[in-house]
Length: 186
Image (cartoon, rainbow, N blue to C red; front, side):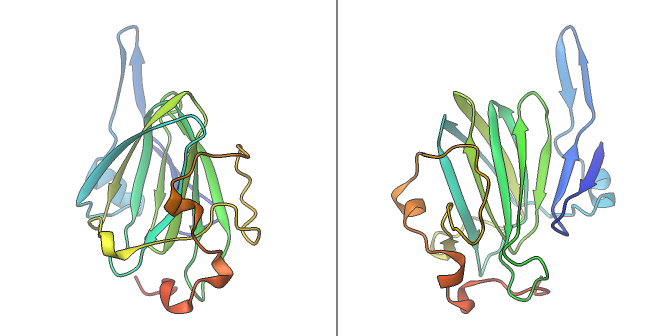
């Protein structure tokens, strides 16, 4: 596997080794010893799988009291996946990184706790999988607007399908400081 740093410290792009032949392919989506060497440590406690249709945008989400690091990949279809540094005091606060993840490129993205996360679906549908380092906590859900002008995320779609919740999140500059993670708190 090849692990690449991104412009956001702690966010990594992972290109797993894929063994393909006329029958199909095989790849490891997680192997503790190898990923620990790449600074992707876990421990992961929950795996999630979602299916979404073209134009769906989910995010930008985070948990505060139960922060989650995530290892993300797409099994089928294609998404534009985004991480936003929302850690108060971080030198990269408010900066984002995006990556195309697909069932064809097998790429993974590791997003550490303290970052907001979202994705939009670019194919007819997409099966999206991710491992989390903490459990989903319904009372600890936070988010920020997908189209926050301060972030200026270059989403590849202009009119996404949004949940009511995702469409009503505040901008980063209007989120109370106590509702944002702190840099160096992990």
